[in-house]
Length: 296
Figure (tube, helix red, strand yellow):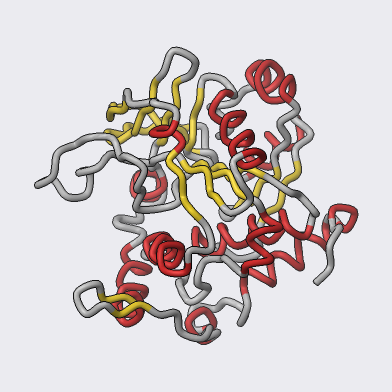
């Protein structure tokens, strides 16, 4: 994110459109902190790496407590050549309806199953993605959040989409399909590591291109871990830990789907506090008490 959006870009595309970021830094990265400081953005370094599962809920719940009616979630591996995707996503969250997520695909149909054709998704998406418009107050009213039993990453997003389908609390709308942005493809790009001044090769950058913008999603985290930190297949621990729980709560062949009560031991065995996401929410508002508008 730091390399994607230098000072000139931020001034021309973000600040001119009154776009303000609140950055959750799961990796405690000095360059990310510096980027927020020079651009007057709100920066929060989590005490624990709560991953995607906790990160989604952290963002949704912090936005709700700030009293925000609509907002956009953007992950750090999203690159755009202007602010159009953010503006479209925010407009969707504001105007489309309070119980709809406005989502952008993060891959093409067939990417994970090479027996299928590589084509753009239609209205059905398999996960919430890296760029999402949402209504935090409606989410709070309907208690519509990720299952906190998923530790760090893997299967949390798959289960959440099933949860939406099963409960009908929210719809997930594919903005790219809705607006006919069907020019989608993969490219080999360089990615940037934010903890060092480094560029790395990346062969699976997903692109959405139109006459008005070019959006890229880099899927960079495992590549950065392997190249800079000597952590090969760094997500395997969480895949292997979360899969048995996912298989327990969701079995499509048997028609089984349920959520189990939250079990704090799933996190504490890895050195986390019993309620890590809530811990980080409370800690954020201790650092930024003026942002807290709604106390629950």
